[in-house]
Image (cartoon, rainbow, N blue to C red; front, side, top):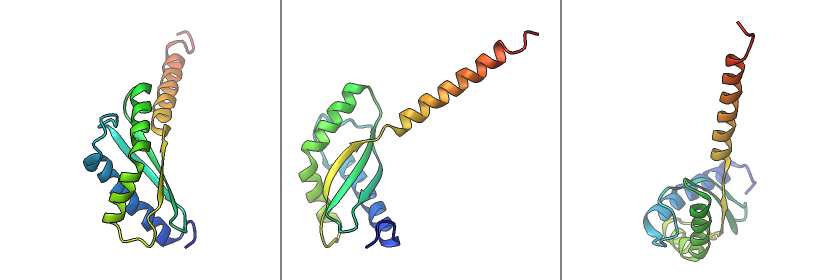
Amino acid sequence: MKKNSVKNIRVNSEVQREMSQIIREDLKDPRIDPMTSVMSVEVTPDLKYAKIYVSVLGDDEAKEKTMEGLKKSAAYARHQLARRMNLRNTPELTFVLDTSIEYGVMMSKRIQELNHGHEDGGDGE
C-alpha cells in the first residue's frame, strides 16, 4: 500500500474517526481533557505505526496532562481500535500534539491588529 493511495487515505480517515470516538467514550483517564480532538492520522503503509495528531483546547498544563494521559492509555486505545476495525495489523499508536489551530488563531489576531493599526494611524486625515 502506497503512502497516498486511496486505500491508505481511507484507512487514515477510518482510524481518525474511530480514535475520536475511543478518546471521547472509552478512555477514562481523568488527565485527558474533554475538549480533545483528533485532527488527523497518519498510518504507515505497512499498518505498523500510526501518528495521531490531537488538539487540546485549554492551557499548557491541560495540554501536558492530556498528552500524558493519552500516552499512558495508548495500549488500551490500540486494543479498542483492534476490536473496532478489521485490519491485518493494528498499528502502534503515537500521540502528537497538534498546535496548528492555535497558530492559525494567533496569526489571524496579528493580521487583524496590523489591519486595525493601519486604519487608525494610516494617513493622518
